[in-house]
Each structure stands twice: as C-alpha cells, then as structure tokens.
Length: 204
Ligand SMILES: Cc1ncc(C[n+]2csc(CCOP(=O)(O)OP(=O)(O)O)c2C)c(N)n1
Image (cartoon, rainbow, N blue to C red):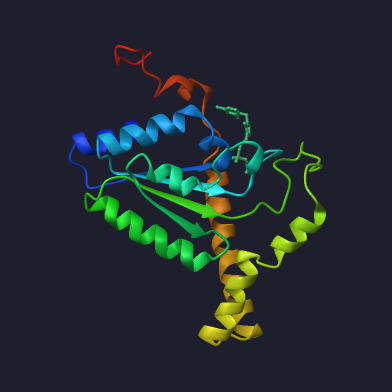
C-alpha cells in the first residue's frame, strides 16, 4: 500500500512522500521485501521506517532473522538505508528530517532502521515471559524520554520549574487534541465500504 501511494503521488506529480512505519516483525514478511524492491526499482518517493525493538511480539530478533542488520539488508535492494540510534530522540529527528527532505527532492526511497527497545509487553494479552526482566531494566537506563530531559536540562538550561511548564503545555495540548478527537464521534457504519474499490477500480 505504501509503494502504491508513493507511485500515485509520483504519477500525479505531487511533491509529497509516503511514509510507512512498521516493526522488525513486518521486516521478516514478504510484503516488506517486495515493497523495498519495487520502491528502489521504480525510484518511488517512499520513506520506510522500521522500529526495530528486538522483539516481534514474543519472538526475539535473533530467532526470526538470519541477518539481524536490517539496514544492511534494506540497502541490498538499492535503497539508501541508515541505522539510527532509536533511543536518541534528536538522532531520530535529524535522520528523519534529512531522509524526508532527500525523498521529497527526488532522491528515491529511503529506509531508516530505528534501533530501539520495547519496555512494556506487546499488548495487554502478552504476559511478557520471553525475556529477562534484567534486560528490560538495562535498556531503561537509556530511556529516550529521560535522556532527552537530561539534555534539555544540561544543554538548554531548563530547571524543574521550566520543565514543569513544558509538561503542563504538553498536557494541555494533548487534552485539547483528545477532546477534539472525541467530539468527532465514531465513523458511521455506512462509511465502511467508502474507500473500498473493486478490481476494476469502481467503488464496490
Ligand atoms: C499480516 C500479519 N501477519 C501476522 C500478524 C500477527 N502478528 C501480530 S503482531 C505480530 C508481530 C509484530 O512484530 P513487531 O511489530 O516487530 O512487534 P512489536 O514490537 O509490536 O512486539 C504478528 C506476527 C498480523 N497481525 N498481521
């Protein structure tokens, strides 16, 4: 779907990019490899972003992939591929900005592997029995949010009062967004087939 959207943008001459986020679990599936190949072959304005958090639900990366360097594998398709420290918010922002700009300027498809970790279980139904609790604690030492807060203190000179103010602003913004979303109500059932097309392209 992401490759199709990117192709549509290019055919319409839209100066846009399609961006697709997925996990290391999706990287193990055929769709990813078909998409990466076509995106490179057709030079599509597509930004693929893999959140590699070392587990696909309960399956560790090493039990799912023979080659665990996902960026290297993506590069083999002819995409520009970067491995990024996914625990470093600013590194992710910087890489994403550069990649998005390059794609928009016609630099072809890019792939980012954000190397990160999932602190919580995959979902509420996951008892999280497949990994050592000490491993989770080790990764928490590099908590991206805590690291960013440390940097804001040391590099931007924020103190507790300044950070409290920022937290309050964020809480307000999120509260407004939530209220706005809740006002929207639920999709009406009549809309279920609205964007579904038959193979001939006609609405179903
Ligand atoms: C097409 C498809 N295949 C299989 C599944 C079953 N499934 C649900 S989550 C998951 C693993 C997802 O991997 P990843 O995004 O790396 O996991 P997370 O980091 O969220 O645990 C799988 C295989 C699915 N939902 N859809």
